[in-house]
Length: 142
Image 1 (tube, one colour):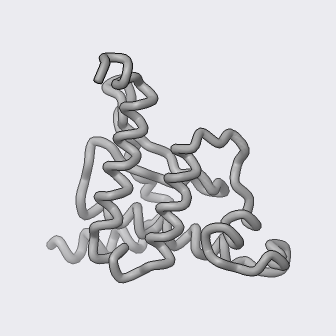
Image 2 (image 1 turned 120 degrees about the vertical axis):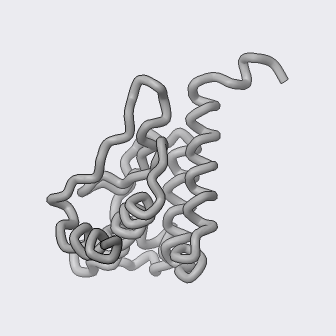
């Protein structure tokens, strides 16, 4: 193996795979095949180097198994499931802080690796995003 095999892209590729595998090995993802399949799909899409942003239709048909006549204008299923996946990922990192983490920005269907380089510290989760969950989590700690 040459030194060229460890390029920045290769490092990010490795980190994406490691974080995906770390999440998929948790009990929360083990109990949820839909969330596991969706997370795997999003990471695979990113690793393939696709530059086109994913749409609700693609998520529904390719990742969630909906039929090709799926209408994203009348069925919110992919948006709801993406919201649940965001919360599941955020809750995991609240309980298990990590220097690198996966996230899915609001209103996007893309997985993002945060804190992968030494120049970019991981972004803290916004308290505004989940105030009740954070309060409940903190109450359980006390």
